[in-house]
Length: 332
Image (cartoon, rainbow, N blue to C red; front, side):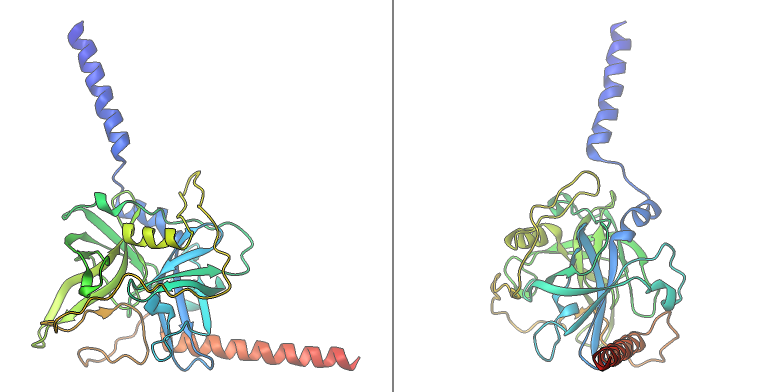
């Protein structure tokens, strides 16, 4: 009798410990859970001649999006792009940009840190609540843990899922104090910038930020990518007065209500010796950036240059139409 009771209690303890640890999800389950809260971010200057594209994660249901600073900060001016468009995921991704990018909302930068390569966006004109990506404690992640990424890789599909593991950990990445990152062999490319690196429970443990593709001697580098740890991002968000929400029953800490941009000066950038290999390139889609190796460009599901030009032309047409309507109303 005692053996039966002990066996029952042991079985219950295993069940409870499994629940406490959390269920390991399949890549498909992670994608279905997290991808609705992943967005495409596109920034461009007036006229649409220059721009940048990347990925972001909705962290509060009222429209706060976390992404990389280099996705939304214009390299020439060091300031946010005058125009920021964010595209919400459609019910089904088809590979046709006309339908896949039909859910567009305006956004503005409310805070950014170039040393950490983080930016916080506020979506404008929302009529309802958005799904969110849950932010986990990255300190619990270990080398060898399975991870997935969701983003918009160049020459790939929108809302692409890639899988891999945590390969290494690097503190003070590129000499920036407090910029701690995971190295991963999860497939990342330009366009994945700012997107989430997710653990086996579908929670964000990193913000995808950089890749290494060519060594100093010109030899190709594969499967070396970097993601800023989520605890670094969470600390920065707290400094902005923001907390990430839980998908079920969670509440954000506070809402940002700022009218001026905040460029965090910390953490400080430490002097560093010349690296043995080139600085890892960012993951944003920049039409003016030359590829590392010249090769024929295959057809891809979407073309950032065309998207930027189309968006700028549509806005110009809308502006002209509104001006004409106002003129007609004044003439009455």
